[in-house]
Image (cartoon, rainbow, N blue to C red; front, side, top):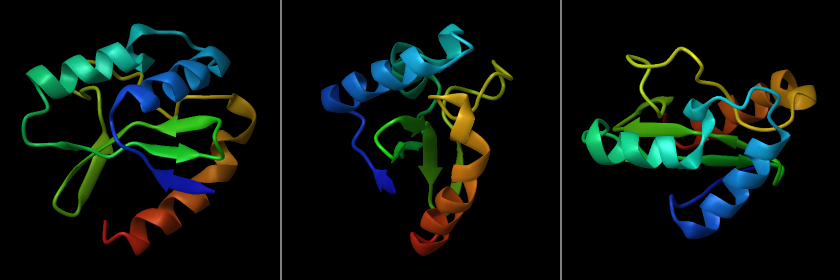
Length: 104
């Protein structure tokens, strides 16, 4: 199940859990990195994080009907879902269905 979350302290706790499951522990997957990206570079983007099955985070940013991975593709090429690897390819259908229903 995919749900939209607020970019706040409760998300930070879930983000830390998803990050702990992530095989690749680069700083570009951390909540702190994304918070700083919004503050400094993501001015035109609204936080649009999605939680997948309470285990993974899709760290998206939204501007009108466009969605990108937050964190800055111009800085890092490590952007991806955050969480356990085993289900990442499976959940994309759910994510795309959710985004389509939300007008993205």
